[in-house]
Picture 1 (cartoon, one colour):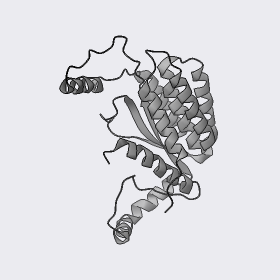
Picture 2 (cartoon, helix red, strand yellow):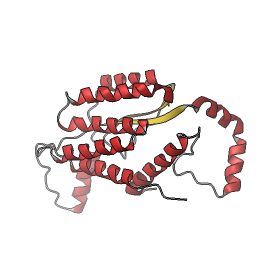
Picture 3 (cartoon, one colour):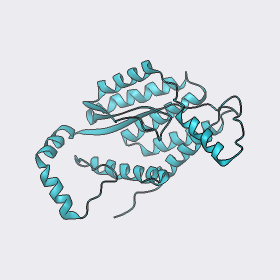
Picture 4 (cartoon, helix red, strand yellow):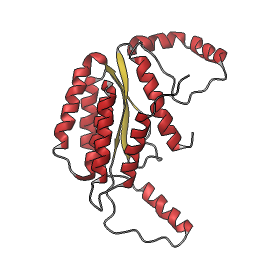
Length: 232
């Protein structure tokens, strides 16, 4: 579970399978990576929580769970970093960059959370922002009724309007939001097209704003979308 590339690929596959099943019937999926020693252990766990699970099924029927994350985009530094003279010095420089907190705009985050909570029937913070994701500013989970799909379309239209006002590295946060909205609608083709356009936009950024990490993250997401779930 320490291999981040493996987690990214299989996490997307897990979500694809969950999404396909959830489109047909209400489910309460186990957290990705949950392991049971065998079917008897699984049955025992389910029966032991039968009453609580029934309540959960009642609450989530007709809805979809959305995990939303907001990342900061870091522009390349105007002045090149001092070249490390040793492996130890290189690791120290890297650690210092990892610890540097990204700039927040709490007002924008509050407005985003408020807009999403108005659509969702329930929401919950997704815990402490992980230190392993230094650009992650905020995350939360929402339960969204399928009857409010039209409002997701309106959210998508709002992101289109926002694109017209946003330039430079900040646009890639909106690309991520757009892709998540399209996947939430079940429009895999449009989501793939959005990722492809995001890659093209990231690769066309001028020197000083071009981020290889951003390009790589979108390419990994595209590869995961193009990989079909493994048959069982």
